[in-house]
Image (cartoon, helix red, strand yellow):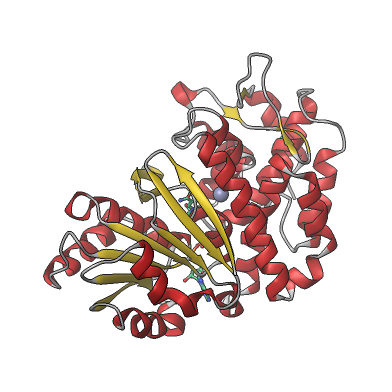
Length: 366
Ligand SMILES: NC(=O)c1ccc[n+]([C@@H]2O[C@H](COP(=O)([O-])OP(=O)(O)OC[C@H]3O[C@@H](n4cnc5c(N)ncnc54)[C@H](O)[C@@H]3O)[C@@H](O)[C@H]2O)c1
Ligand SMILES: [Zn+2]
């Protein structure tokens, strides 16, 4: 079993990675997050597979309640948050209780926000079950919900006490969801580690076949990269913005398709767009977009903008994204696959001319 320590000024926590890590949950809970009661929060898809197993294991330690909500991004809302917190209050969970988030990124973000706000903040443990949650969303402390105005607009930073990524749980994850998680892993390679990108390419057969060793290595390397960046810049004042590579276009694409495309799929398309944009702007080495496109394609990910999507709408959605101040469109490009780019003054994001992006998007439409 492998353990990576995330060490921040106000929180230090282990990320345990490997097949079978879940078997040691009770001892690790008592070590890293002892509590009077545990509230397992999970969704209707994950619950039938893993909730009873987790409840049984946790119950050997302290009373354990399971709270299930309807799966799906559309339920990552304040309504679900208030429903969950009401149910926890009714169950008598007090300030020395802890929340266990069992599920993908939707569960992690929502349960994390419950933990951040319940009695002004209680302990949080992440048990990520999707690849995306293992390589990305369970690390770094961002929690929150969506509103009518956009994604993740209400939330809080709340770091977990412990993250347990048992790759054996990926056995039940649909292939399309696995590929979506791989998009974020490719992003980690693209911004920070060319050798990791090459490894993903070389081992993609084993990864797609869900071989435990390769999955564990993948999660480990992604967590290391994300943790390094978060440790350098917890509240996104600078370098953490590099994790948004592919996301300026990706978020626009998610909104313009009314979330008809998975987050990871949108990021895959967005990385190709932003690499091309970087090439056109003279920031990114020529050929970088092609390299990423080949790898993403081999992993079963899309790299074209669906013909049903209007590029003008995509651009408009990207401009209204919360990361863009006063309508100014910015992105976090790469220098080449394996390295993020910086401006002459050391900034990690560059301003985009809407016309230039529009041309790139037009040439990328299916
Ligand atoms: N907090 C962060 O830093 C951060 C980073 C990236 C993404 N996110 C958020 O994460 C969310 C996307 O996460 P996601 O892709 O995991 O989505 P998700 O949680 O909706 O999971 C995808 C689907 O797979 C199912 N599932 C999960 N694990 C499974 C398993 N082991 N077996 C079978 N089915 C399983 C889920 O029930 C769901 O239907 C978005 O809301 C995004 O905003 C947050
Ligand atoms: Zn993402």
